[in-house]
Amino acid sequence: MNESAVIIATVVAAHFLALISPGPDFLLVIRSALRNNRRRAVGVALGIALANGIYIVLCMVGVGAAIAHSIWLMFLLKIIGGVFLLYVAYGALRAKRSDYAFITQTPQDAQQKATPSFWAEFFLGITSGLSNPKNIVFYLSLFSVVLTPQISMGLTIALGVWMVLLVFVWDAMIIFVLSQHKVRRAFGKVAFYVDKTAGILLGLMGGKLLHSAVKETV
Image (cartoon, rainbow, N blue to C red; front, side):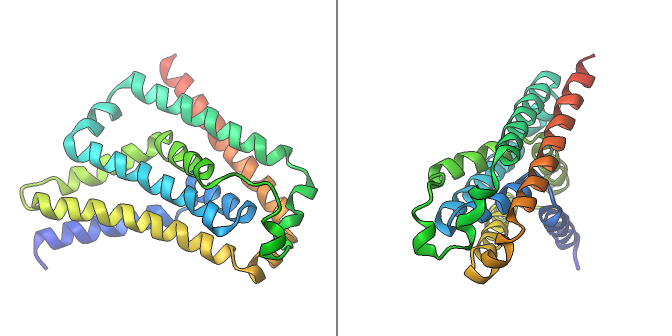
């Protein structure tokens, strides 16, 4: 195996392991899948994938490095990300048990439940992806390995496209599984607790981001 193949294989493996690790985006996908029908929940997956794509392009053209090394830009990202996660957490924690009754209903009955639109979920997804400073730092570290004379620009672009598609497919697959009626019926019994747990974790992540932002400016 030549050096280029080793580099690509290493980057692909690192990206996949990071993708399947639970984080804000993962929790958001699960929460959206449980609270919406499949078509609307896919908006979150598309938004997250697009946000990842934006950061990948920025890292390819060198802008990502400027953002990652700018104290004030990273501070702003952390503040936005922290406030956003706290906002989503608040929505999860204030929800009543009756708000989850529609999950165990048939798709026809569930349609009558007022839920966010596709574009509302898309906005949540892209905001989550863009406001997470760890995303740009992660992709910057990956592309610092890829952007070498051994790797052609065409291969680098193909790798970026692959990463974006993988993010979307992975999140969409989670949504597809959780949107199955049998799965939703099973989850419906514990959805209230799952959402509350997700809310607590998102709130802790948001608080950690805000604490990190304040700590670095003191």
